[in-house]
Amino acid sequence: MESTVNITENGNGLVIPQNYKKLHRLNEDHLYHLALDTQKDDLEKMFGDVRFVCFGGQPSRMEKFSAFVAEELKINDHEKDGDRPKNYASGTDRYSIHKVGPVLSVSHGIGIPSLSVVFNEIIKLIYYAKCKDVEFFRIGTCGGVGLEPGSVVVTDKAVDGEMNPYYKLTVLGKPVKRLAKVDQSLVESLLRCQEPDDEFQTVKGTTLCADDFYEGQARLDGAFCEYEEEDKMKFLQDLKEKGIRNIEMESLGFLAMCHFAGVKGAVACVTLLDRLKEDTLSCDVSMLKKWQERPQILVLRHIKKKLNKH
Ligand code: R2B
Ligand code: URA
Image (cartoon, rainbow, N blue to C red; front, side, top):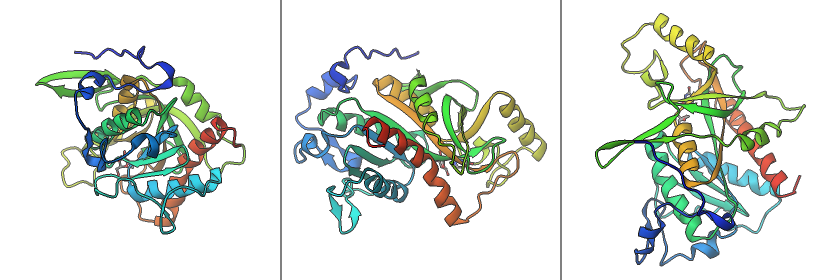
């Protein structure tokens, strides 16, 4: 079954969850994995001014991103824990949430199942908070296919390991498909944020969203592997010919859920290696940290433009 999208209810720029009628029947809603709650927390007061929600895998990276947001947007009145931005989800160690001005930075863990849980709860959070005109971004890392490592890929199409542009999940024992329709205007807007002096290239392209880091991404260095080097290379060359520029693990679910929720969303990831040349990620931490900032830089330029702060 393919889910249909009805975003006509999202008047006034508010995000209305498809399930709002059942949500209204709840006395209180526990956003369990965020350790937030509609009774004990005044979500509108805490988060009502949020306009951009930026997701990324690791809590530490998203905390750093939040500090970067503060620096770039010149905001210093945000809530802090000592000299670090406050983690609003500190009551749990599942995910992290940092807020600086209108920008929420949220960690999503690895893979679509982990993303899906926090995505559901963030959609409800911005609904309860009455946020308006919100845009979502995934700012992440990936493996490149035939690209110089350190390049940034903005996803203009996401597919699963069988090249289908659908996020599939099982509901009440039956398969449900949700189209990962990409908001091309947001893609183009991010691409326009490139600057001639950038130390890195930014390209758009199709992203393969895998369910696994090792066999699911044709690696030879996992604990399991039932194919040979030439099978792997044939597969990856074939991906390149089909326009796949990068491989990661959340884009398909992220874009499908954005579309289904009626929220504008885009994915920008930095390539940590070229999968046509290698499988194993080096542990040159300082280089990786520098590269991880690249999609952040791009998204922040977009945010600054939207806020007229450039
Ligand atoms: C990129 O990096 C992670 C795996 O190392 C995964 O979350 C992804 O999409
Ligand atoms: N993340 C992935 O999912 N794959 C890579 O190769 C690198 C980062």
